[in-house]
Amino acid sequence: MRFVEFAIAFGPEDGRYQYPAVYNARSIEAEKSGPLIYNDNSRRKRSGSAVLVRFEDDALVARKYQGETGVRVLRDEAAADAWILANTQDEPLDTIDDTDRFLLILAKQAVGATMTQDDIDSTDPTSPVPGVRRKRKTAAGFFDRP
Image (cartoon, rainbow, N blue to C red; front, side, top):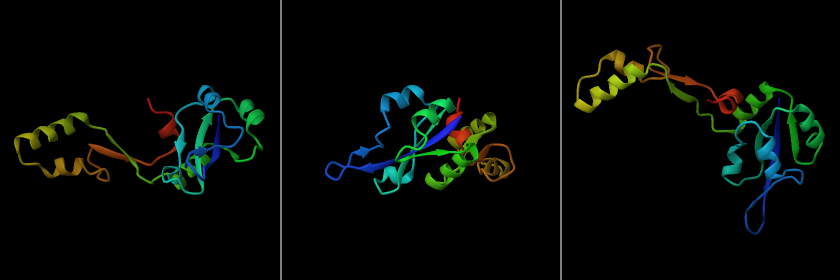
């Protein structure tokens, strides 16, 4: 499995994304594994814009993309994790790990019932009380979602 960063420029007149010559959107769509991850600069159309793509076929990456202008092949998943943390908004993913508790809290709020301290703590992702949990963004978090 390889992660490939493609640099993006913007057209001077129309501001459209301009990818490296080797980037073919149809081929990328057919060959990639998971979503395209655009960095924050891309969303704001700034210099340093890029998109990260994961491919399962290492030989394909070596044959088509290695050494091409505007393309950087990341060495491993740890490098992809570092890229994601450095290039995307560092907003951790919040998940609910106790659905029943969360539904009970919503029901209490709907009828105006008093919340206990445990109820309040379970909505805090940094609290050890089961409820909402916070995960940091990683390549696996983006690419391996169900």
